[in-house]
Length: 289
Ligand code: MBD
Ligand code: FE
Image (cartoon, rainbow, N blue to C red; front, top):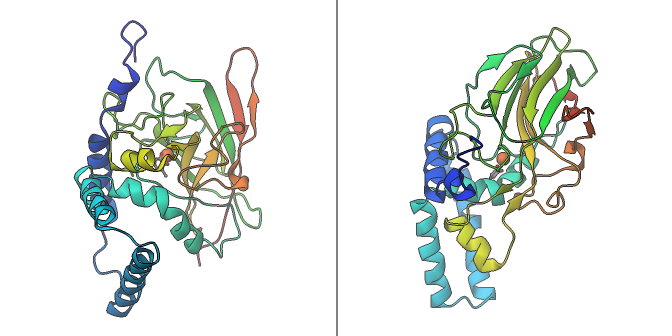
C-alpha cells in the first residue's frame, strides 16, 4: 500500500464471498479426505446432531418463520463460501481440545480457515515476505524449539501466517502479494529461530457475508484478537498448530472463535530507538506416538 494512493479499508477487504470462495477452495485442495468415518460412527454422530436440533425446536417452540429464516441463512452460508469460516469460528475449538488433550508440550489451538501450505522457506534469522512499505509496528519473534524433556531439536521448522496491519490475510483479500506475511523459518541446529515481521491487527469477521449477518442479527461482536498463526514441527515429534496473542488486546477475553488460552499469551517488549518490539516464545514438542 503506497502512501500517496492508500487503499480504503473496504477496498483492501474485498468481499466476504471472495474470501469465502478462497477458503472453500483451500479446504477442498488440502483437507477433503473421503470416507474417514465408519457407518456406525456416522449413524451415531449424525443421529445425535439431528436429535439435539429437534430437541431445541421442541423445547423452544421454534416457529415456521424461524425455521425458514434458518433455511435461507444456511443456503446463504454455502453461497458465500463461508462454511470453513463458520465451522472454524464456532466449532473447531472443541475438536482441537479433543485432539490434543493428551499432549504434554506447548499448547495448540485452532488452525482457522486461512492456512496455506508451502510458504517460502528461509533460514534464521529470517524476515517474513512483506511489502517494501509494509504498514505496522516491526516485531522480532524469536525462540527455541525443544522436546518436552528440554532437548534442543535440530531440524525444527516454524511456519508462520498472519494478518497485516489492517487485519487481512494474503490470498484471501485482494491486492496483497501472494505470500505476504506467510513464511517458513528453518531453525538452527539447536532449534533457535528469529524472524522479523510486523504486529498483526485484530481480525474482524466479514460483515457482508452470512456469518456477519448472523453476528449482526444476534447482536454479537465480530472480533478475534490480534494473533500470529504457527505450525511448529521437528523430526520425530508431533506437529503443533497454534496461535499466539498480544497482551492488552480488547478481545483476548472474548475471542469470537474461543481460541485464546492463557499459555498462548506473548510477553512483548519495546526494543527502543524506534526499532519496534521483540517477543520470545519457546515451543516444547511431544515425541511422535
Ligand atoms: C481467522 O483469522 C482465524 O484465525 C479464525 C480461527 C477464524 C477466522 C479468521
Ligand atoms: Fe487468524
